[in-house]
Image (tube, rainbow, N blue to C red):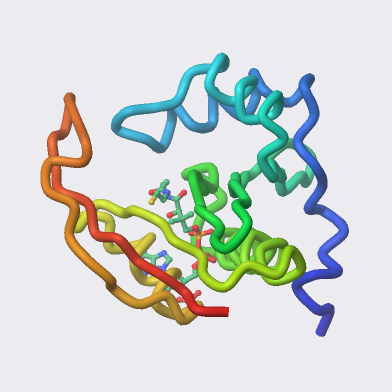
Length: 150
Ligand SMILES: CC(C)(COP(=O)(O)OP(=O)(O)OC[C@H]1O[C@@H](n2cnc3c(N)ncnc32)[C@H](O)[C@@H]1OP(=O)(O)O)[C@@H](O)C(=O)NCCC(=O)NCCS
């Protein structure tokens, strides 16, 4: 089996991908990031990666600090979910953090997002704390903070 880190379909997000990524985001997120937010992530040199088949089927965005990384966004198109793409994108994000030498990867997730929680927990992330009223309208919710120690 091909190692996750060798997946040739995972490539750096380019400026020309941003519209397609934002429309995927609009299809999966209750509070979708705009095109501008994805552009800002590229400008800030966050680690932005897409999973590309005939079209972009998913993406992951990670910010790297000196000691810790933050998984800011991950998504797979609704009609491409449950085929392992999310798991591979998550593995890519974690691998980037590991290669950068950080000690921990953090992320926030809605308690109601059982799918995302399942892939995080399978990847070894553990619940760290609850962040009250983290998510704003239109679906106000607390956030679960998860961490993975590398
Ligand atoms: C979370 C998300 C990225 C997962 O992507 P995916 O490609 O469907 O995930 P995978 O196919 O790699 O699934 C890996 C594991 O997750 C779990 N999982 C995935 N979909 C699931 C579902 N519908 N129900 C229960 N568990 C599920 C399973 O444990 C699965 O393992 P399995 O294949 O052995 O059953 C995707 O559901 C998504 O884009 N959701 C909307 C955006 C979002 O919520 N992002 C996270 C914000 S914190």
